[in-house]
Image 1 (tube, helix red, strand yellow):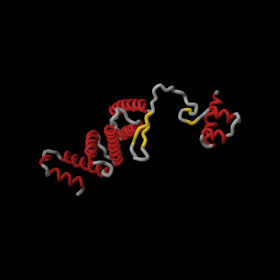
Image 2 (image 1 turned 30 degrees about the vertical axis):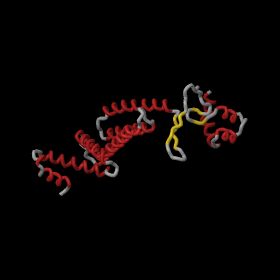
Image 3 (image 1 turned 180 degrees about the vertical axis):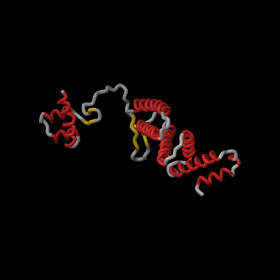
Image 4 (image 1 turned 90 degrees about the vertical axis):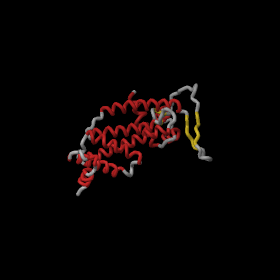
Length: 235
């Protein structure tokens, strides 16, 4: 006798299920097996307080759609586990940060996970329009908080004391400071046009250009050919 028959026999003997039809008993047994499969496949990943959340998601999704093939069931399990990860990050954000703002890298990871949730739902042909709308709204709110935090705290550096190992902050006051465009970067690339102009005019050597920039000779070649010469040709 297989697992589903064992469960059906068990439920038929219970008073609370005495009024159910054969099909309803079968459905009850199938749902129980799905729960067992989910918990078995994620038991080493989920914390105890997350299992209830995972089972509630499983019941919600299986009530909306039948997942018959093994690939669909695997994708469903991945969907639920990814949503568990989303909840973990949300919980972390709510408990670890007293300020009304969050680090951008954590928000980016949260956004990536939510994108993955939507992809799983798309594979499973589940309705995602409402969730997309809700997530976009949440994302925009969190992004605004993160950017505000950056503007307010961009002069702050967190350090660990080498003697006592305690954490402390170095604060740099940015009030009344003039903003000057850096001549040593183009976007995020280390680049000084004057240095490359001197190298191009053979007034300094490639080794000297690399020494001034504090880079390798290969980097000088890369920027000279890929950026400096392109700027000259474009003009």
